[in-house]
Amino acid sequence: MLSIGSPIATSARTSASCSVLLRELQQIWSEIGESEADKDRMLLELERECLEVYRRKVDEAANAKARLHQSVAAKEAEVATLMAALGELNIHSPIQTEKKMASLKEKLASITPLLDDLRTKKEQRTKQFEDTKNQIEKISGEISGYNYPNDSMISCLTLEDQDLSVRRLTEFQTRLQTLQKEKSDRLHKVLEYVNEVHLLCGVLGLDFTQTVSDVHPSLQRTNQEQSTNISNDTFEGLEQTINKLKTERRTRILKLRDIVAELFEIWNLMDSPEVERNIFSRAISILRLSEPEVTEAGVLSTEMIEQASAEVERLTKLKASRMKELVMKRRSELEDICRRIHIEPDASTSVEKSNALIDSGLVDPSELLPNIEAQITKAKDEAMSRKEIMDRIDRWLAACDEENWLEDYNQDVNRYNAGRGAHINLKHAEKARITVTKIPAFVDDLINRTLSWEEEKRTLFLYDGVRLVSILEDYKLARKQKEEEKKRCRDQKKIQDLLLTERESIYGSKPSPRRSNSFRKTIGYRANGNGSMTPSTPRRSSVSGATPELLTPRSYSGRQNGYFKEMRRLSTAPLNFVAISKEDTVSTYTSVCDSELESPSHS
Image (cartoon, rainbow, N blue to C red; front, side, top):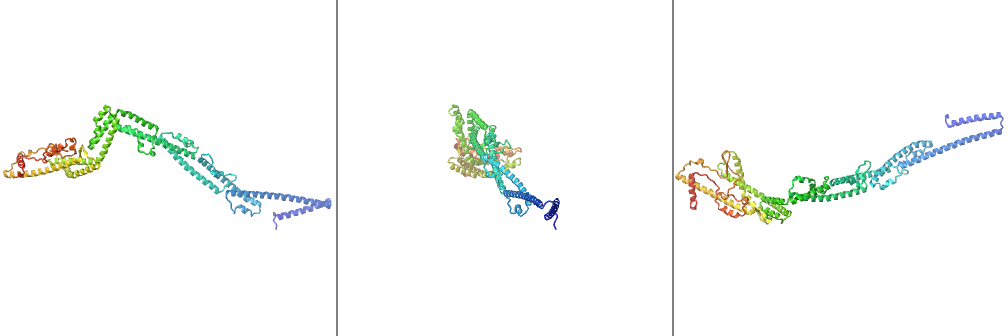
């Protein structure tokens, strides 16, 4: 059964209608009385008109088909072109599927959305390429200094006929990232150069803005919209500027160091106060710094150098009027050094001779100063070489002081009385006895060290003009004689006590009425607040007295000329190391004992 809207049903209805109309037309013709020829002619005309209508309709349909086919083909070609440009070729693409469809309208309907989508993608991709291209052009221009295009990738990019594939876009983006990294590295390097120029300009006191402007105006960064030039020309300009500034810094450092050295020399000569020196503390600081370490702003400016030069000129003029005073001061310093190390200063620059030479005009003070300076340097070197021995001499003298104090302390009959300070003196005496026992070994060690020093230096070790070894040997001899004298006195006292005991057994003993008042103060003692006696410290016995001091370096100070005469006198002087308090009766027996001890037969 045919449907009403189907083509067959439509054709059947059309045929039926035409037959009815044809019969109605023939009936009308019959009624009119048309001839058969006319009827045939009119039927032929009717058939011809129907054919023309059909032919016109067929032509119109063919034209419509051709237009549809052309549109589909154009869109397919455009789709193919876009897919090729975008790099989206696929064997399963809609074009391949559409070829299996019979209807052109279906093909057109299916390809139109795909074409629109591809056009949108092309616009987006083109915009990405344009943005990337613009950035590459900008960065390349900054690197090249906008002189010439240095990127071949840009020249091959044409928006009319171009490769818009993801692969190509990735290449552009990779190139852009490379350029961005290069730009970042160059910016960082330019920043380092600019910072170094800023530091050097600060040290040298130069105008930083003008200096970098001479290299390239964009380095000032006054206009935020203007990008910093990072071309090779800028690098070369900055490197040249830095080299010039470093050369200038080196030249100024050498110049300022020479000026500061002159300042130090004049300051030391004139003994300038610290207040005056502190004014140039910044300039002085460069002496202990290497060239790269000089970073303080303005320390090498022309103003600083001119100020230091002016100070040198001022002090030089002032020095001329104070040279004699300086000579005397440096000579006094030389004598102080020699006095501390117990050597004789050079007599050629003594105060008397120096004054005479300067006053007579025979010698300029500036010529005399270097000689004294050399002598001071020599004396300081001598002090350094003698330091070890001088320290041991001081320790030896301190031990001798302790020995003298101990002798005074042992002669104090009230040393064991309970009183203020008695326990302190007792502890002091214990330490002094330990120290005294070490003196002989200490002296021998000092002699050995002095002899080694003399052998090494090939000269004698003099102490206030006397050879130290001679002083030590004399001290050893005097100490030995002192020990022998002490031993003789102890033996003599034992004999006296024995004779006294014998006489008492013969004549009997009688108590002395003045026993309680027979105490006599010993020379070199002082009374404490509680009535006890404490030896004065330090004690020195006179050479002409009954108890001479042992010969130490102090004994030779001021006695160089009469040294051997003094030694002969010391060797013949009577020695008495024990002071014994006796009663009158005992004193009588002592005088008798002394007379009996004059000959060996009474011993």
